[in-house]
Length: 312
Image 1 (tube, rainbow, N blue to C red):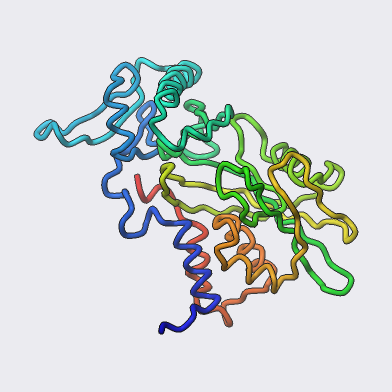
Image 2: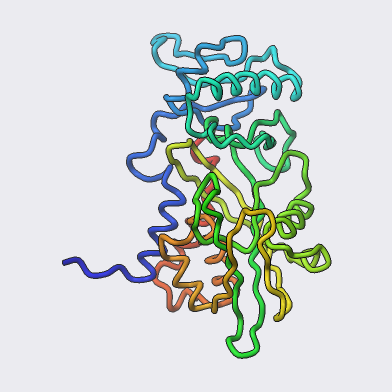
């Protein structure tokens, strides 16, 4: 009988899950670059590519001149020159796929757009329905908040939410006190305050004090598609007597965990994997996990800062 995995080994397994696109058995070797206006913005899996080939007025397929069966890259048609025009045409295409019930990803249609660009601070090339971005492997951005307080007897504790059983993704799993994807055109701090109020009833008078502390990046793959994600991280110290409350139904309950309790939780299957990385980053920054005591310290750091550029 195999020995039980240590906490470090279980945590490393979570990090590997979050970077499954880089692991053996992923579709990485079969994906094709996706370009807009000559700039690489994503990756296309073979199961998506077969549908793009049927729409040459929207997608341009570049093939090897000596072997036309070998597709080199996929681009949005150069005839679509304005961001708004690109958004409209791609949205029509996606609505058609949605009606045909082709992809499981589109079952989670949000009616919310994400910006598509080369990187966060480069020009917006188009906007795309949030649930469809995984089909094109474009980078998604979000905001995650570590809500913590200093308990009078337990010391530093963290507020952790449980996702609603009705959530489209990762239902019932543990999550950060508040978090959300960054919609096209919305400033990061505005998104943070919106998510705090909607998910945990944290008023702007408190959430405005959240401190930006960095970011994490990772790249996972599942049945919905490819997810190269970057999350902007904030620490928010909550008053000791403040209790988050369920508001919009995104969360079903909130728990106050000690540092040791939350450390154990993030290395379990009960915690949403990418949110576990957000908490892990908090524990490292606040000195609860140190390089002298943690054998996988550098592997943890590397796994929380993967870069999409190496895949394009």
